[in-house]
Image 1 (spheres, rainbow, N blue to C red):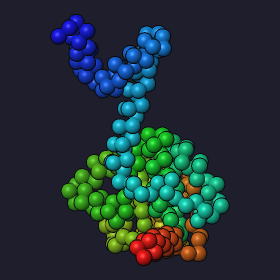
Image 2: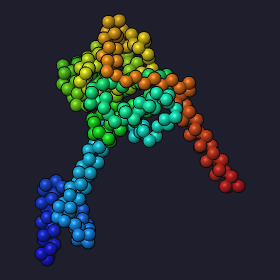
Image 3: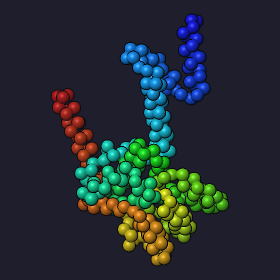
Image 4: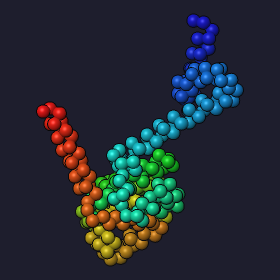
Amino acid sequence: MNQTTRETQGLEMYLRALRLPSFVACHGEAANSAESQGWSYDRYLQHLAELELAERERRRTERLLKRSGLSKEKTLGLLDLNRFPVKVRQRLPTLCDGGFVERAENVLAFGLPGRGKTHLLCAIGHELISRRGYQVLFTPTFKLVQRLLVAKRELALEAELRRLDRFDAVILDDIGYIQQDRDEMDVLFTFLGERYERRSVMITSNLVFSQWDRIFKDTMTTAAAIDRVVHHSTILELTAKRSYRAEIAKERNAEAEKTKSEKTDKSK
């Protein structure tokens, strides 16, 4: 083993000990570039540092997306914006920039089933993670409620709320689809109250506010819940006459039939 090889191995050992995997993987190629292009020592180190930071950011984004529960299919790139009202399209860029999270504001998406509410808020959630590095959690409301009920029975509700508080934004999907008994109403109201003016909530609902008494039962609790989510919020009304999901399914079926027909024609 020659001196250069020993030095290289020693360097890589130190870089691994310092947990700099991109330095380990790229320092040789970067050194060749530095020599051929006449980089200064500072430029060489800066290049490796940039690679390391970019890789760390990529891995962090990957971890946040995995932890978020967001569907990989419900991204901004796969969202057909032409199906949404003009007001929604105009607000979308600002929402994706994440300023509302910084201000602990909420986003509420209303509309009949199949209008794209879930896809829209999930797309915003993806952007909040990839652009700003926010921690986002997507959950059907009934699952969150069941999670809180279990914690309450185990006398650990406060600890569970603290765990949820780590998320900068929580997306509650289909808030109207819970069993609507007193215990469920209580833990959901507690969750909304804990996040009020501290953390963001993003909610999809098939029920307009005048129907939220189906969720919270009594008039006073319903009014208090609405007050907490509406204060400092952006409301998105998805008013399409036809189902977004139904149209996508129709387009997919048409594409499948077209492909099948083309294969049949080729086989003749």
